[in-house]
Length: 559
Image 1: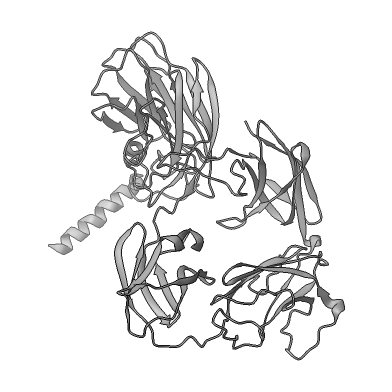
Image 2 (image 1 turned 180 degrees about the vertical axis):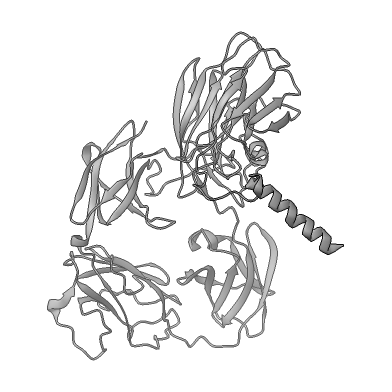
């Protein structure tokens, strides 16, 4: 029986080939479809008034599209209480509303750039359709651009109407108006009524149209937007990933009879000066005095306390404000006899891009008693190799330094003179006179690190002018090399002129922000309680840097 069936299959296939029916097999070669789908026809036409409240909306695409991607990228404002029925057949999509088209407001239907064809090509830009059963279409518009380090397409952009009761919370409450960014990060919220709006953007990785703090980036505005009838506003949003988790204390232990180590679940973002007043350490007889506290220079999730001498095997308790747990540990019987060692530094060694006026820091594993670091630290020209302790360094090779301790265990240093470009340098520290707070000498005699000053012959620069109503602009150049490019800050002068120097060759994106809090870094704002972000802008064109060349005339405009 099986033999007869196989013979019949072969005969049938041969017959098809003889009659030119070989097309039933897999398609042959040819160029792969890389064209994005397009919307070629819409019914009722965009901007229609007096629409039948029971009208069915129909879109015709240039090619069949993926239904699931359409459902994820379909946005309707005002948001209906009941989801519409979506029917797809070939290139046509029918949207059957379960609520009538409103007559007092404009119905806005947006198809986001997340829509894909069957070859996974995305819609190049979001599409918006406006209808009303009334006599007038709202015509306000908010357009702009989302700035992020990567993955600009398909980011959600939402707007809420500002009122006295506004609690903009994209974690729980969907936006009243929604769209998606295109592949260039640009977006447009069209057909908006007059009023004040608050705009934000986020990734929406789980496709529920809400912001997930654990997974999504979010960008908050620097101001609310006011629209009059027929007006348009522009706003730029910087989408960043926020670390919303608080570092939690989970281990407390004594390392010797004068040190207690606190381990947190993640990096501490607060200084020891902020944490120390919230700490209490005590036993049955009273408080255990904490004399110093510092973060581990090599691991900022680890805090070290220097205490008065503990009672061996005594039971101590530690409490932290805002934490209901009472942590217990045993006093150590191990005497504090170990001297301080270098735990981390900047430069860490072998860096080749240090500026011509070098500066850095050295972090120790214990609190220091020495204050005169100027006589202990030497910066000198070398061949980059380790210098023996016994070698006398000629004064002609040395550069003067300024040193000071910035925390119990950290020493900051900076050169008082510019270093010749391309020079190989060694920073050497004499440890023979360095003691901790309990008088223990360092077990090592010297410590050193080598690095070199960047050669301008291998770099270029970017210059230009900042314009717009901005108070304290800071201009940054972001390297487009690699997935996460680094930012280089420029220097500004009067009249809005700026220059960013010592840039490696390659392509850069130029952005700037208004440093209203004067801390030198961009403030992305906060969601709870709400705080506006600092104003920023991005130069739309990519800037190319070449060796020994200044790319000038770059215009940074705050719109």
